[in-house]
Length: 426
Ligand code: GLY
Image (cartoon, rainbow, N blue to C red):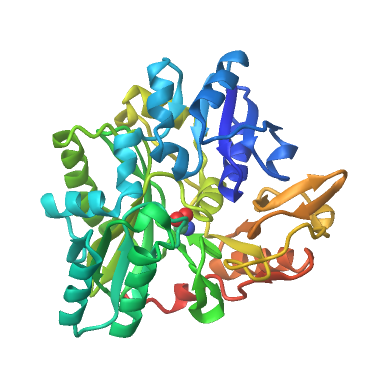
């Protein structure tokens, strides 16, 4: 079987790594890929936002399955283009991908079907948004750009002044282009965020172990929001009772909403939850694996990933049992100094050759590339050292022992990944 993975991050390295282990005997291709995927998959130089180009490659090379990593190709309709040609692809179509690509679409869906979420107002006119902000006296509030903004379109405004500035950035200066043409202003909820992901064929939602990521750049949740500086799963307090609560209060009504709205969702659905005073709220949806959640979750997944892909596509997920390794698993992201702002790249990465190949510690690569025979930094998040063990203490220790063996100029990582395991605020 030939499988093409689209994307170039740590998530895609983890996908290639897992797919390469399939019992179906898979030849893996990755477009465009990175220094890590290049060791297990053939790198293909394709513009993944150009469905025609991808389809041409798939046809010419008789690719059986295409697995989409990031949200942008999904939002631009790559699945619809493949389906029009009867080609097999794993991920939601354009309409379903609006759940992530439009914050207005997802919020309105949640409101219409009375699924728990923070209350919100929508604005296309900056003057009306300003007038609304003048009436708001309780801060923080949350401002979201409607469209995709590479993870930067959400601003938690601590004061009225900050909210006016964010409004100016989103709607007037248009810092995120058209993504900010419409905004959502919603109440801020304080609590514990949980990444609740699952596989769905539109009829059944099979949850993955709950995960938590660390969004801020520096220790103690200081610094700017990033794509994620580390993650772990499972979340010890998020027990079966919580899982069932989320299934009955959120995923079940959501799947019913999909049916009523003619949304055909097949693939991975990431529900960003916030648990405040023991009440779950939907913060956001992503229509793909999280990064670095994918690295952690795929290290725990025991079932053949290609089985899940095939059963999802066939609409038979209700008949599949997905097995997970219950071991505590943690991922520590090693980033380029300056990330998520400006950073330099092209620095040689040292030490990976000293790390023995082990089943319980894997260094997934993201912003890396091979330059001749050297591996060099090539992005903001460079590596994700992922480890599992019998206890969280041990998994964290194993991950950081491996981190110590790796060096590149200006590297930056958090030294407190997993700290919330011992102090949650739910
Ligand atoms: N780690 C969060 C995300 O992938 O969006």
